[in-house]
Image 1 (cartoon, rainbow, N blue to C red):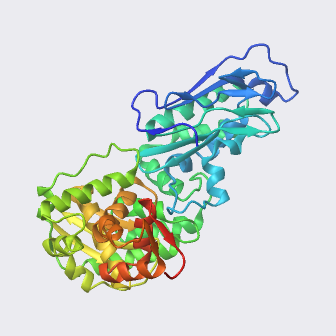
Image 2 (cartoon, rainbow, N blue to C red):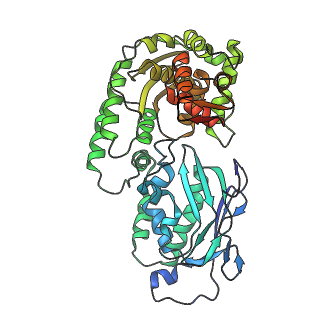
Image 3 (cartoon, one colour):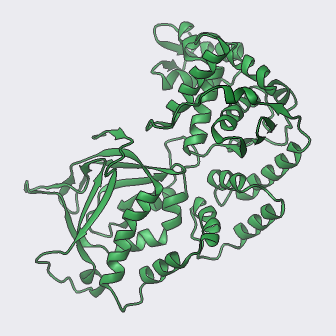
Length: 439
C-alpha cells in the first residue's frame, strides 16, 4: 500500500467542496444540482488525486455528490460507531458497504477510502486504485488515525452541501439529515449503540430494542453496554447479551481483589498509530516493576499473584464459551472484581491478563467487558496479554532459524500454559515464520 500511517494532529482529514466550472447537465435534476468539485485529504496527501489514461492529472473530482451524501446520511451512526468485530482481515460485505466510500460511487469516481471506527479514534485507509469505468487511477494512498469528531465534521460538509443545493426538495438525504440534526444528546446514547451494530436508529429494530430493554432492566453500566454492542452484530446480540447478564450476576459473588499496585505504574500514553504498541509497551513497564526479564515466563504469574487474579483464574465461572466475549470486570478505586467465563484455563489466563490491562487503562471507576471488538483498548489488552503470557523473546529462543514448527508451537504453548494460537500469533506478528508441518 502506498502512503504511510501516522497520528497526525494537523489536517489529518479534510473534505473541500467548491462550485463546479463548466459542467454539462446530465438530465437528472438531483444529480445536476448536486455537482461539486471534491477534494479529499488524508494525512496531508490528496487522495482524490487522479491520473487519466490520457495522462491528465488533477487533485479534485467534479461529480454529482447526491449519492455520496445519501450514503453518508443513511449510514451515519455506523460509519462513526461500528468497529470491526474481530481482528481477522476477512470482513463481511455489509460492513464494507457501510465503511467504504466506494460503495457510493454509483457510476462516478470516488477514492478507495475506508473509514473504520476504533472507539474515540477512527482509522482512515486510502489505497491507490484504477477505475476501469472512469479510465483513471487514484494515485495516492495513505493511512492515519483521527478523532471521531473530525470525521463527523468533514462528512457533514457533503450532506450540508447537497441539502443546500437541493433546497426546497424533499429527498432521502433531506429526511435523514434532518433526523440526525434533530437527535438530542439523550437520544444519541441509543443511536450510538444501534450504530455499533451497523443499523440505523431511525429504522424499526424491534428485536434489538427488546434486548436493550432487558439489558437496561439488569442495570448494566453504560460502558458495559458499549463494549457489548461494539462486539456484537444482529445475529450474536441476544446470545452475548445473555452471557453478559450471567457474567454480571456471577460477578456479584466474586472475590474482591486489591489492584492498588496498578496505580504504582505509569501507563504508556496512547500516541502510537498502532493500538498493539501501547499494550506491548505496557508489558515492558510491568516487567520493570516486577523485576523480570523479557525472556522470563513467570512474569504473568507474578502479576496475577500480586493482583489476586490467580484466584479468579482458578474459579472461572465456565458459564459458556464464546470467542467474542471472555470476561467482565468492575473496578472501584483499588478494588476489583472479575468474572472470567472461558472454560479452559489457558483462555482464562489470557482473559485475566486482559482484565489487568483494562483495569489499569480504564481508570479507578471502570466497568468493562473483555471482547473481540477491534477498538483501541480491546486491541491493546490483547497485545498486552499475548506478550505478558508468551514473551516473544522466550518464543524466539526456542525457534529454529527464525521459524517454528507445529510441534514447537504446541510444546511452547504447554510450557507457558497458553493456547497454541497465542504462540502462533506472537511468532507471526513478530516476523517469525510458522511452518505447518512436523519438524
